[in-house]
Length: 219
View 1 (cartoon, one colour):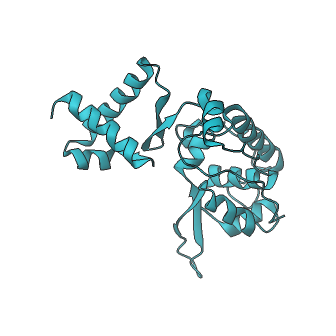
View 2 (tube, rainbow, N blue to C red):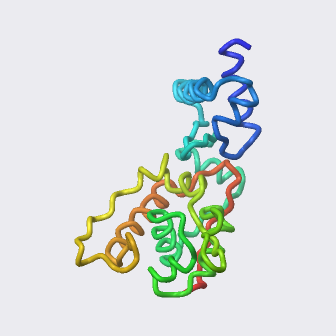
């Protein structure tokens, strides 16, 4: 295939998938090197930008996805009759903050940081595609480990976890028995960041993602 044909194939694969895809999977499908697939992905993204298309290419960690542009969210909502998303609760934002900065973590770790049961909140965030299981910790009972998802990056307009705001440095006297624990002031900072991103983007639309509902349980 010519470069133009391969670029078109990459676009078709992303469109048909509907879900974030790793460059290596696209490379395998086209029988090319991963570096070549990445270059083609950037070409697709640049082409859509130059065309001022209503579709853009998102980079979500090491995955890529086609998505509608946020500026057309009102029109998309009107056609699809999508209800406005209800903001995440404080409990959900706090759990996301703990996981995002310390992942992978166990539910027990999250509960130790927050000081309350988090089962309901964690389950809801998993159902909504913001958190996912990342394996098990090799300790007695082999507890589940949780981490964020590409959906988390998309919802908060992040390319990778490196885009998260830095937390204030803590002195030795401020450190607790929990490594890198997020204290209340730090938690408030990251909650504000998450909430601001939700309000700014009002969630991505056109990618089939479910609404994020208010979490009332777990606190």
